[in-house]
Image (cartoon, rainbow, N blue to C red):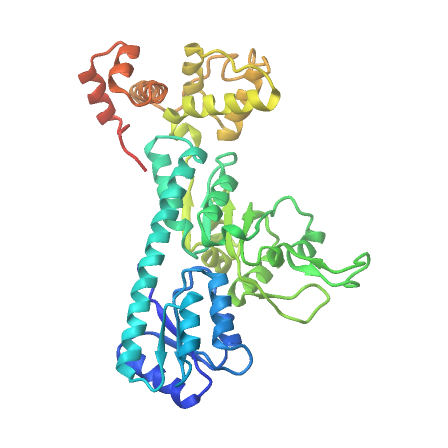
Length: 445
């Protein structure tokens, strides 16, 4: 855990509140002190980085009600209740209701700090276990969604796993058809915001006249034809993820307004002067060099640097040819189910053309070819209609990619068994083992 945990103190008595705050600060424990349960609740969320220490008797919502709401938000959040003399029965009831501990007034600062430390230790362990479980689940899901065993795809999956649980805004770079939106959805699903909305906007697919209304929303009567209030895409993404595809196509005037929203985390609907707070993670995607566009004055440099907190580059299919057979088989199965057709028989004659083709449309084009195969339309269509040169790849590189893909495919079909794979490929186990090491096929993400 690299995040610092804090103690949220809830106490209406200013002297007691100040005493708790100072005692914790003297022990270098981060603390935030508020005077009401209502103020405390505004700070609580699932995976809250801290614990709560609250007086039971508070104006408005009392400590028992706060305990109930806190456990509804996060059942594992430690809540320590401070009770007055004679409130022992309340303390017992609080423990039955899930309180972590209770402190009876009057108490010494050292004792309060000791109880808070124990609660923080428990919270730290809980959050660490959650993160490990989420990472394991995310890795399993990623392997079935971001398919491939090439070093490039291992790197992509590792980046998604590392960045998914962070709050950082991300810029995804990749050619058309490399799967930028799929990666954005994987990042969303791997984040604490997975229960919120994933809102995707194609910045190149919106008319400039409708862009502002679509993004920011509008009030009734904001312009001719605006008959009722409309919630914009950014506001709809509140609590979730906003995915801005083809960000390079966003009009410059809108870039200025988007930058302000990202900096202030508030927006105003068209026709309104009321600021609306928004809390969403922004993932942008581009198929061009955004920094170069910024240098040329065709994209705002300040927006580029605001979006580019973390970069996730996606490799084109031609740079991970060894993944093609596995991807193609996956798409064949999907297409057969979708079109209610039988899966075409395995044909090793397809593998050479598949590996030799340059795939300008990347994974999207490969999926379309799989559809055509299932529908019986592969004849006369690249890569099967004509022999396509492998482009700038040398002969040794092409042979190595072909060999790696055959071994990876055979291993997958034989459940990773070295003996069965060697038998199918007609090579000695020692030879196969050497090639697996050479091509790093034993690496796991």
